[in-house]
Amino acid sequence: MKLTNKIAVVTGASSGIGAGIARAFGAQGATVIVNYASSKAGADAVVASIEAAGGKAVALQADMSKVADVANLFERVKADYGTLDILVNNAGVAVFEMVAEMTEDAFHKQFNVNVLGYFLAIREALKVFKDGGSIINISSILSTDPYLASSVYAATKGAVDTLTFALARELGPRGIRVNAILPGHTNTPATAGNFDGDFGKMLIAGTPLGRFGEPEDIAPVAVFLASSDAHWVTGESLRAAGGVRGVGY
Image 1 (cartoon, rainbow, N blue to C red):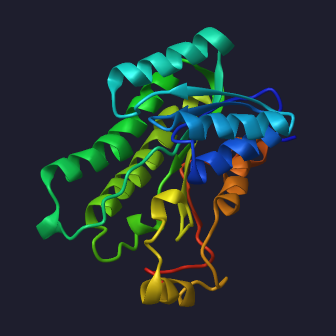
Image 2 (cartoon, rainbow, N blue to C red):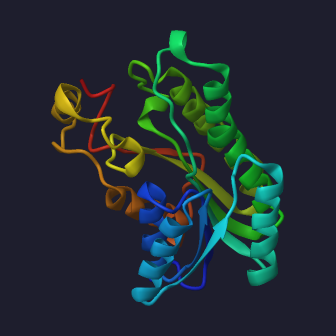
């Protein structure tokens, strides 16, 4: 039980990678705040699965791109638990379009959730963290190896990588470690249909481990970074991509 008595917030945890991380944290003894923006049913199902396995969890709604929502979320955490040990920034959106077709609204939506949302969560979480703790930012291998129609999404994840390294320096004196996980091509509700047909076959062919990732492949990496096993790890961007280098095709 690597996270016994730890308090963890996982944003965007009603499905996909966030849900996988929340379940893994619960299994390792953490009390998990399962954040969701709109899917209460999904978040409640994650909470129920954690509790059924003997863990502790609660679902809390907040749109992570909205200042008031984020402030309310962490005020609730402080009121209910008094402290925070782990923050996983996972909530995100992706619009895969060529720049010529992308609207300003789609551009801003991605940056507002994927970058501003991480910033807001970290800023508010720092009011609840005591000395020590772990911040984990979910990035993407597309931050370094974007493929066609991913330029804006990839740019948001590049910003996340830079923010991670900069904050590791800034927060090191408080004993707060900041790291990023860069998942590869991972099956989640958000990617449903993206890997179909010949494109998917090319991606698998370019993955040394020969398959797409699953949320359960990413979750143990987050457990490691959140735990004392990673006490000397900060400012790192850790790929969890089945060996993919480049875009995988």
